[in-house]
Image (tube, rainbow, N blue to C red; front, side, top):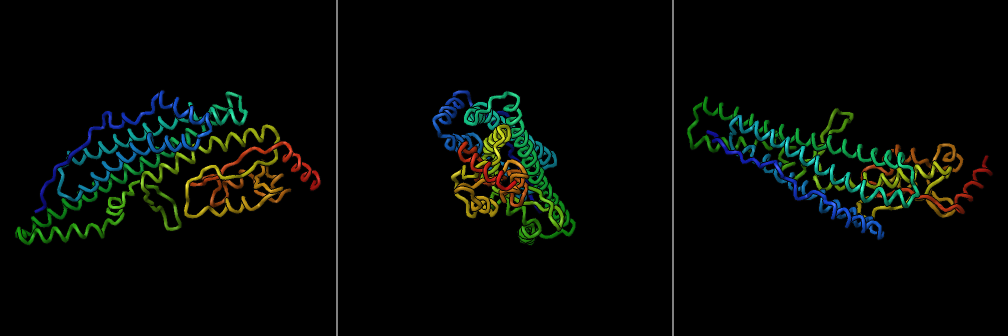
Length: 339
């Protein structure tokens, strides 16, 4: 018959303590940013304080999922395992959000506000809180889905093992033949639960549910890839939002569009290439309002953000910047001529 298996559970207390971003480390990252190495500072934030606890979490969750078909767990062990996954998930959400928030408030945002001459405290807090809140909600949602997927996978495999074991005992199969049947049964689980085994083997445990024409579909990603994308996108939104606010506040009709992240991608999104190719006086631009966009035959910032495949959205490497007064004067002349 199918044997019982022991469950080895990690202690969630202080599980991520070594990855907490300290005041000294924040000061170091701040110095890097002030010296013009903002890109390197973001890279360090991700590589030292976001990805390591995430990979640690991933490895433990995969080990739990991988053991789910090794044998039958006691019911109390299955419940303890589910609670442990929830606690480890909450801990990871906390460490990621805390490190990200510290970095934005103490390092990145102050420098970006300074560069854009944004001095109003109420506006600065609004920009920071919006970006931090959206990032926090996204991480909470994604990791909660991941936790549910992991627990559901373990319970499903355990339920299958228990049912098969009951069937084998009921049919009173001999021990030598039972071993062969158990091997076949475990092989059949791979065909019945392909997404579970693929997640284990490929380490694609991050679970994202999307609504499609065929209903809700679950997509799976590697945790380092997904968090790297989310962190960079959220960090750069401080830059983008600050530029847009100051451009609108100073009645600047257009902003420049350029590359702000030098990481490699297989294919640049089509909408970014369209924006970059549509130049006025040698510069790729976006309008700060719809009327200007219409007169110049370009996209507005809001249109670019909302048009598939979403300029300045997840995975996008581009951002906006304010233009010189001489350039803005040329644009104003064009607008007056077209009035």
